[in-house]
Each structure stands twice: as C-alpha cells, then as structure tokens.
Image (cartoon, rainbow, N blue to C red; front, side):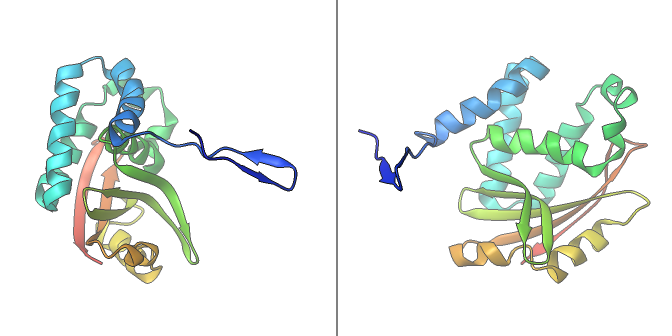
Length: 182
C-alpha cells in the first residue's frame, strides 16, 4: 500500500526505487543502448562496485581511465561538450549510477557545488573535475576542501574521500588524479 499525504488540498505520493537492483537496472538501460557491449559493461560495474566498497583509490583511478578510454573518438570530434569537464563527469555519472549507487551531480552547498558525489557501499566520494590547462587535480582537491563540499555528508558517519580529477580534451582522458580522506 502506498503511503500518501493530503496536505492543503493536494495529494502527495512518495516515489522512489523499490530496491537498489531496480535503481541499477533503470540507470543501466541507457548505457546498454549506447555501448551495446553488455558483458564488458557488467564486468566494469562489478569492478567499480569492488573498488568503491574497499575504498581502493588507485583501482578507482585505473578504472575511470579505462571507462573514459572507451568513449569512441567520433563522439569527441563532433561534440563541443568534450572540451568541458561536464562531459566527462556525465559519462562517469552514468557508470556510477549503473551500480545502484546514490549519485548526485552538481551537489550544492553553501559555498558552491561539487561536480559529482557518489554514496555507495558505506562510503562517500566527492569529485571535482578540472580541464587540463585550466587547473589541476591539486587545485580541484583544494577547492573541495576550501568550500567544504563534503561537510553535508559528515552527518552520515561514513568514510568520505575527496577526489580531484584533471581531464585533457587532447588526450580525452584523465591526466591527473589526487585523492585524500575528508
């Protein structure tokens, strides 16, 4: 039975995912259509879950590089978005969401917004992306700390990792990766 609320003459029904599996499958569907290589994608998802679960930041960097390397070169040439950090954050958003993780893009706080926040398997990763030549991973990490992007997540009592990522439009991949506990 659905819980509903009648307030001020308006009926409200809470909506959500019935399970983490349902969330993962609904978020995986667009990736399946785009990539078509279901088995390879499924292996990447399991590896992503594994590195997130144990907090393996070196493994996370390696896996994110592999994911970005899988973007066909034609998508970069015809897409001016590939020159901006949001393009890369969007691709990684889809991969994280396909694992069933809680993923939030442009998570706003009182001093700005983090590019990507991923909460999964008892951990939180807060990401800031920078394009090569505009700033680097250390600048991204400094921004995460200075603006307190992780502060909202401290209430959860879960380990939090700050992750600064530098991406190059030229190499179309990660050129710098810095991470540390919040």
